[in-house]
Length: 420
Image (cartoon, rainbow, N blue to C red; front, side, top):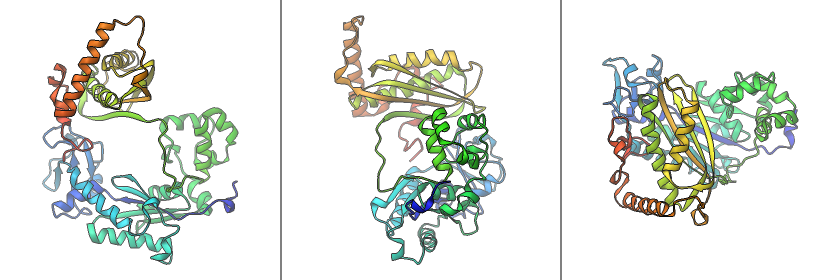
C-alpha cells in the first residue's frame, strides 16, 4: 500500500458534455436533448452510414454510436440528421471560454471536442467554498449559456478525475462525483472487467487474466517488479494507476517525442477484402503526401484493418532506409495483409500510421536502384504535391479513385471527417 500522505493532492476537474454532438443537433432544431430520439449519421443518403452520435432516448432502443443507418427504425418520432462540425466546434469554443473564466490557460487541457481537464487547485477558492461547489457552478453556467448538460469528475489527480467521471459522475443525480486517495480501496479496486479501466484494452486484459489478475484490486496488489518484467513500463504504469497514482500535471504539457502521421476511417458500408485495397491506397497517398510536405522519410509503417465482427488485423513493418514513396509503402502493406487478414471477412475500419521519421535530406538510396527511374518518380511526386497544395486533394487522383470502392471524393471538404 502506498503512503498517500506524501503525494501531492490537487483539485482536478474532468468535464464532459453529455451526448454533446446529438445535444447540439437537437438544440439547433429546437428539440429537447433529454426527451428526443435523434441520431447524427455520417451521410443521411447512404444506407450504410455510421451513427456518429445518438441521444440517450435513442440509445434506450438499442441505437448507439457505431450502429448503421439501416438499423434505425423508420419512425416519425426519430430524427436522423447529418453532422455540422463547424457548429459543434463553435459550441465547444464557447464552453471552453466559460471554463477559462475559472482557471489560467496553463491549467486547462482540451482532451477532445466535448471533454476537458481543469486544475482548480489554486483558483477554486476565488469562486466557491469547495471544488464540488465550483463544479456545480460551472455546470450551471454552461447549461445556462448553451443548454448543454455536463458531468464533472473531481479527483486528487488527472487519473482520479477521469475515473470518477467515467465510472460514477455519469450515473449520479447531479452529474458530479469526487474521488480522493482515501476512496481508492472502495471505489477503484472493485472494478472489473479490467478493460473498464482507463488504459487497459481487451488484449492486455487477457494477458493480465493469465497472471490471475481479474479486478483492479488484484492489479494493485500484484508485485510491480513482476509486472515490469512481463509488460515493461506499461506494467509499472498499470500498477500505479490501479493504486490511484498519477504524477502528471496539466501545466506540464506533454511533448511528443515520437510523432506520427496517421489516417483512420470508418467505412460507410461493409467492404470485401479486395475492395479495401482502393481505400488503403488512398490513405497511403494522403499520409505520404503529408510526409513529403514535412520534408521527412518514414522508417516504420503500421496498418490496422477491422472487420464487421470486431476482429482487428494489425501489423507494422520497418523500411530501414526510410521512404516517402506511396508505392513502397502500399506494397509492404498489401503483402502483409494478404498473409494475416481473412480474405472472406467484411471490413469496416482502416488505419494507416507512419512513424520513426528521419529528414529526407539524408536519403542515400541504394546501389541497386535504377537512378533514372528514381529521379522520374521523385519529379512526378513533387509535381503531384505542388498541385494538391495549390488546388486541393481532388486535383490529382488515381484512376482507382473513380471506382465504387473509393471514398476520396466523399471525404473532400470535410472537417475532422464530417460535413461542415
